[in-house]
Length: 271
Image (tube, rainbow, N blue to C red; front, side, top):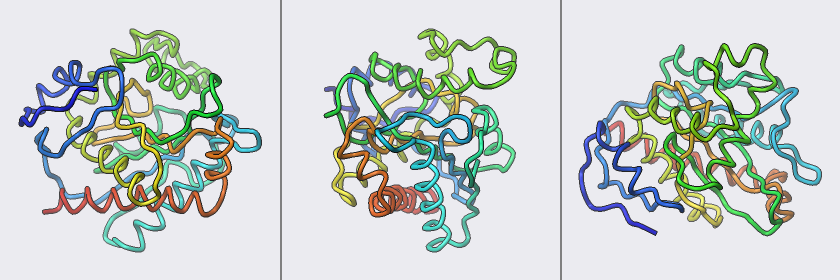
C-alpha cells in the first residue's frame, strides 16, 4: 500500500498524480495531501441508488434500492435538523426509477455544492467479504473497482436510447470507464476530502470495517459539477452485513456516520 506524500498538489495536476498514488487497494488520504478549493456548503443533493424497476444488488431478502432510500432519507433528516440553513434535495424520495444521467443533472440544475450517492455492495465470490467503500471519480486500478463500476453502471441498459444519451458508452468496456475520469478532475480534491472523512467516520462512529477510499468510473458521478462521492455502505452478499443494513439501527448508524463526515466537511469549507 502506497501512502500519499505530504505535498500540496495543484488541482490541475492531481488526477495525473493519482494514477500513480492509487495503486491496487484503498489509499490513505490525508488532508494536507491536496489543496481544497473552499466554497461554502449551501446545497447538498442526496442520491438513493437504483429504485423502481431497478432493484440494484440483492441479499437473501434485502434489495439495495430499499436500503439506499432509507439511509438517504435518514441522512437528509439529520442534516436538516442540525443545519437548517443547508438546502437538502433528494434525487428520489420514493421507490421510483431515475436515469443515471438525470441524477447528476438534477444536482447541476440546483447548483448543489455536494453530491452524495448511496449504494450497497455485493460479490458473488465470497459471503465473508464485508466493509464500507467510498468511491470518487477516477482511474480504477483493480479489477475489483472495475467490477463495482460495471455493476452500478449497468442500470443504463434499462434506459431507452442509452447509446445516444451516453454517447455510445458501453458499461462492459474498461476503456469507457477510464475515459469518464476526465470529467471530474476539477472537483477531485473536494471529493477526496469528503470520501476520506466518510470512511474515517464509518470506523469511529459505527465501528465498521473500512475498505478505504477508491476510484472508478461511475456514470452517476460523470457530469456532476461539484465534489461528488459514491458510498458502498456494506455487502448484501454477507449475511451479517445484510442483517445490519436491513435493520433500523444499522441504517441509522450508517446515516449518522455520513452525517458526521458531512458536518466536518462543511465546517472545513465554511471556515
